[in-house]
Image (cartoon, rainbow, N blue to C red; front, top):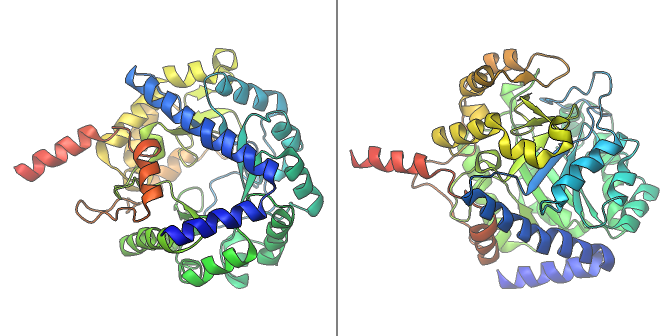
Length: 414
């Protein structure tokens, strides 16, 4: 474990622009830890303001992926630069420094680079298919210095075309990936694991290929069968979900590569970032949603004179969502209990935040299924001491599931 960690540190230091790396270490590392500590302090006072906010800045995209829940085929809706700056400035005023930027395809937003440049005291992770990142665009990102592209690769040539609804998808994406690496930008690769790509991409050979190319980190999501075209046939089985968790834990301890996950604590217990309150999502319409795949909301960035801090800390809808979700599962409430999502929306009079206006009907059509939760006693703890230590203090359940655990213990004793 020690040797891969040293190799990873040396490889990253040698391959990333030093100014860019320092911004990452300061704005994401030091200030990100400070943001989580502020979150824990506020939480004790009954205030929930997520240290990590994810913003879908527009709905447009150049691809048509299977199972996409974003209205990429509808007229463009976007958050303009002025309001993007209002969101970030208000969050910064309350200690935040890290933001996830999603779409659609974020690089289709005309003001994206100006947005990044306006906040040199922040760090942004942009979720992208990479196809619009040219050498010129990558050079701009290096000059701005506060962005890490997370480039989505969904399979081999044939599978990538099928999964993403385009032609020559993999090669076009790899050109964007190479442009980022050529310009010495901290760069990651994300994969939404499903039935058609798990055998190709959940492998040590694939991760070693990424390392050889110079990629700095990988992020395995699991396919969520939601949206207007659910594609149930792509969803992972419970056995495959367990396989993913075991693989990630093993590879973290073996390879000189950062591997991110957002679904487990250091002891291997499942969690949902929305349920813990550590992250929420803003849609292209400005709606403040529990998470990207829960497309109903009662609140908007325009509320309270664009003070998202005031809106989020006072939202009864988000509070009820967090508590209800944590009471019923450590996994994903959307996949396991779509009926509860619908009930919460109806209880609070939440509006459908999609352009297609079919979010409730889609919940009705869903069949409850497994998510990331593993049965008690089957958890897979972190092997790598650094990951385990970091999760202990800055990425855990923050006590969100205490009531659920107590009820479980009572059932076991009885």
